[in-house]
Length: 117
Image (cartoon, one colour):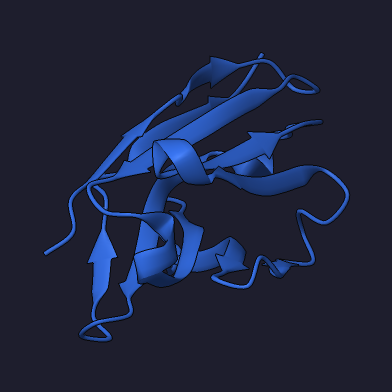
């Protein structure tokens, strides 16, 4: 079992920045994958950014150059730094991990990001 606690969502103006945090109950090295998904109203959940256990990263085309995923191994935490936000980034953002010992996906409860003037 892996518990995930997210924080950092909120209301921000277009062009602004936010940083999301997700702290896991187990070591990041116990995860094959850590990432952030988002789901906007009326849309399917999509992968925004991910980081493999090796440290390699990947991003959705829509956020490349604006968002950065990183992790703090000592804090068991993965971050999503979001810059140059626009209204299309408005969504509930979910932390996701794949636990290497059972291959299962675990999800956070989600944090709402609203980009609006």
